[in-house]
Image 1 (cartoon, helix red, strand yellow):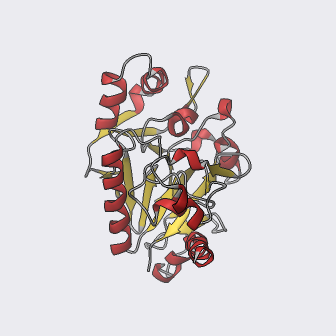
Image 2 (cartoon, one colour):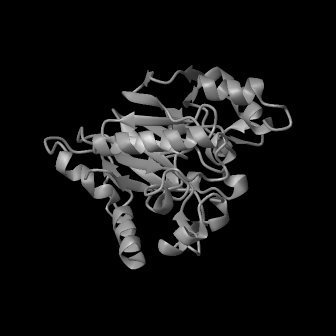
Length: 284
């Protein structure tokens, strides 16, 4: 039983970027070369590329999921940890470049800037940054030595997340958030859940991991941020939270709701801590 369940989960992780092909409009061709890390959305033109921000292979420790019983980890063959990643995503839509989060930052050994070079891009090339939430492995790549890394980018952040971190959080817990948002204040637009951002990207309530945690939908793609830290466990048991989730009841509710939404709408999920290549198809 353990073997079959584990194999089934690994197969689910492996089909990530193939589901969009049946929905692709072949009348037009995307401008970005499609490879093993890039998918084409259902409009046939928009591409989304997975950018790996961590070195080597990343595993989430079993202790990160303290409420999940040892017996379940043994049944699922996950005693040694859960495959994961630190990821960002690069969208090319209507001739412009959009980043979903910016990773750890070079000072913390993030690889985003090196990844951009593989697409012949520099930080100056980025037109928009859409932020899922304000943890350091999502906004750490925006600033270096007190200066913006992406000087031309229009930055979109959730109003709920901004208020929680920049205005309401004690000052001993939000130094990075205040610095980053201050440096980008003239480039910053705050959105509400349900708003449609440039290039028809919809902001969706995914609160729980953080107070204003946001998912983004563009066509058949759902960028889920940190909805899951251990997909092999949480895809099957969304009730179990990672220790990182700030409001665990809300996080579990958001996880269940968005997983159901993705299944019902046959979406591809892109997650910042999904296993490589950080896409999971829900096109059942």
